[in-house]
Image (tube, rainbow, N blue to C red; front, side, top):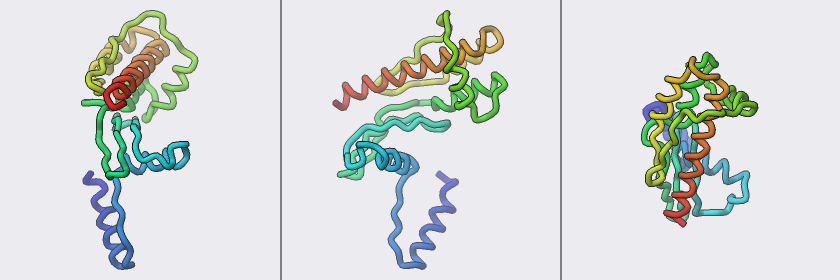
Length: 170
């Protein structure tokens, strides 16, 4: 990403001037290693990971023996966090909205299904539809019920994605 170019240039200069090796890795690899370090998977070289954030919804097949990180699932458009932030901001919450929405969803439930299922196709989702549907409902339904249903639809799609990945990659 262009934003990291200055950092990489500085790292190369620093490593060269100090006669040290430079090790490069991606943002996702950093998250994967941090999660592995504190888990029972610390010494596992082949696994499937998820990276969900405001800008990323990816499922990554990790094969560290062959230094291979392959995106095998995720979103083809918006990220889960992006959907939540957009809905939260439209509801008048402060950006980023994930934590606030999570707190509301803990004490809420929905009675009527208003949102379509998020379809998972070959381990990938498109999330713009659920975001559009939710935006249209804002002001016409109770906010806590909408938030609860959005979380339910996201959770169900993550479960379906996980099942498809498990079946496809054993």
